[in-house]
Length: 254
Image (cartoon, helix red, strand yellow):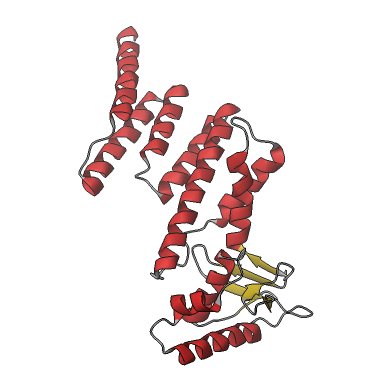
């Protein structure tokens, strides 16, 4: 690819291996085109997102300037990567030699979510792992536009679903170590996801690591208390009560 664009975690744009700088507005504008790449973008909607405070004529001029600047910054040989639909609405060409981490992330995870439960096919597993590796952090850190916040949350939840599916795969093939690694990776993104916390505790129990399971529960209890002022759910408490009962029996036998 002639150009690679990263929006997850650190924002970085490389052309021919050299990093280039874009204005904050140009980055935001490009991200919008990528995230809604399946749509032709009505100019009125784009103006509403980016230049709603301007007078209509000025706003249309700003949109034209933004499109022109993006074209000039990405001069891709033999390709008009930013094209117009039949109605004159801007969109990124499907054939453009540009790699976007958002696209690689989404396309790698989406097929997995419809796959049957249990073990994944080798190629599907490989694609899932590669996709999750593209998620180096949240979308457009430091941006707080409403559409960015909405997409940030959507992609974060997609990542968590991907890790949960990866956990399920490794658990199905008996690879507890990698299943736990996937669970902890998910919890680094969202430690308050109690269902994932439960699954990690269950994996520790299944592998006989009862002390580790209880430590995980204690960390969860402290986190929920400090962040939300609540206790773990009834199901989580029952799970750990069962582990503690087994642990006490084992201690008596010893």
